Amino acid sequence: MQRLNYYNTTHWPIVIIGLSALLMGIAVYLLDRPSAQTYFIPEWISLFEETPRLFGLIGNHLPTFLHVFGFSLISCGLLTQSRFSPLGICLFWIALDGLFEIGQHPLISACIVQYIPAWFNQVIILENTQAYFLSGSFDPMDLVSILFGGILAYLLVRVFVVKHASV
Image (tube, rainbow, N blue to C red; front, side, top):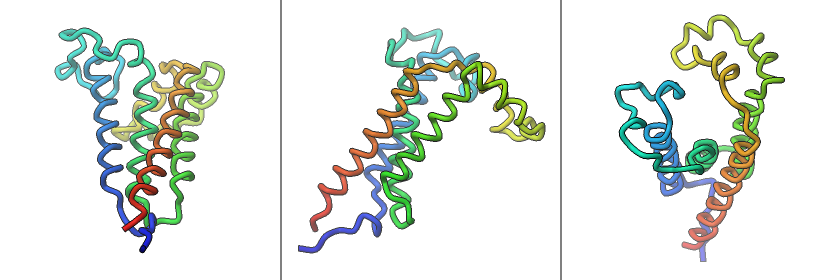
């Protein structure tokens, strides 16, 4: 019996699951958050005023969970031929998202903002960096959801690889 090497194959099913998770995160912002509070949802496309809160209380922390979960899966699925292991990839996304969440803490955000270069204001995605840290709200439960998102992504990759390891 020949074993499939994780590092030689792009795993499209986990990439698709990761993309689906990111789409669900967009749905949270589209349906449950006012457009004024979201960077990438223009007012004309927001459904916040027309629909009841679909995601309820879980919608408060679901985007942070889905961000780590989705990007971990996408990265694990696409970076199979790199030197990065699934564990390393998931830990990277946990650390990155965790640092951005901690960066919103009032005691830390003021320190970070002073190091944001002025040229960020001229770059489409980066122009909101200062507002992200100053206006964002630190929430310890977001750190928990980030951790769970990374752990679940790692476990899913492990199950998928073990399940498909036999050819």
